[in-house]
Length: 119
Image 1 (cartoon, rainbow, N blue to C red):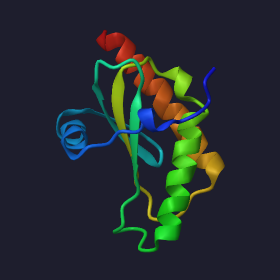
Image 2 (cartoon, helix red, strand yellow):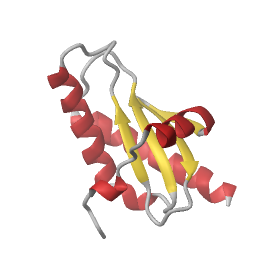
Image 3 (tube, rainbow, N blue to C red):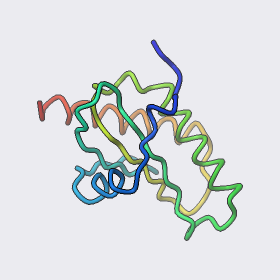
Image 4 (cartoon, rainbow, N blue to C red):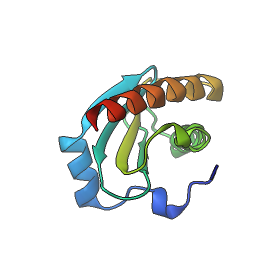
């Protein structure tokens, strides 16, 4: 089990991110919303977004992004490889890590079942 999140597993590039946001399938669970699109690669790439509209201070946004990335990193083996994913945090308050982790578990299991049925 590779429990790291190297740069190669980060979704970058305006064109790629825009494509996932416009054309990707939607899913959500609890405090997280996700869009995903098959990439054809051998690893999943992720992008985490916390709206500046809800959290003006960068410290809060960065805290939430760290919590989301960590909860994904610890459970990423639930998903089949070859997808680009974006995670967006939706509540207006800072939730504890345990809640984010539980919502990520729920979201990833739902995504895994949708991805398996699509193949």
